[in-house]
Length: 96
Image (cartoon, rainbow, N blue to C red; front, side, top):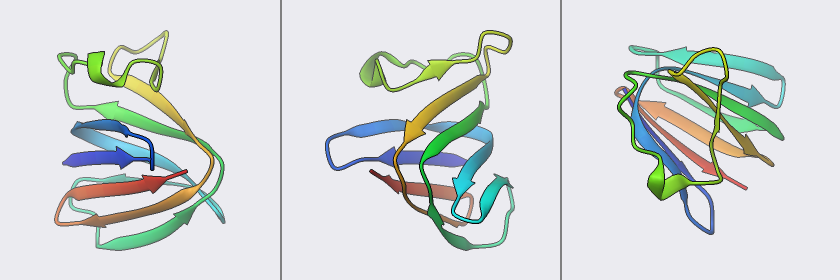
């Protein structure tokens, strides 16, 4: 599925992912391929992204992404809040 994370200043991330865990306002939650359409408010925290492959190029997003030291296919992005929408295996996050 495709993930896009956008802030007012820049695009933080764009790429193919297997799973994404979000800091929801009522607790964290995860979405996978084929998830029902959803819109949710997000609180301050980290978005955990399980990448589809190791070949993702992060040069355009330097400084925004924290790689996981134990798994090269997992990255985390810090947000201050926002909203996410998933529909037809495409996730768009408008983050602060």
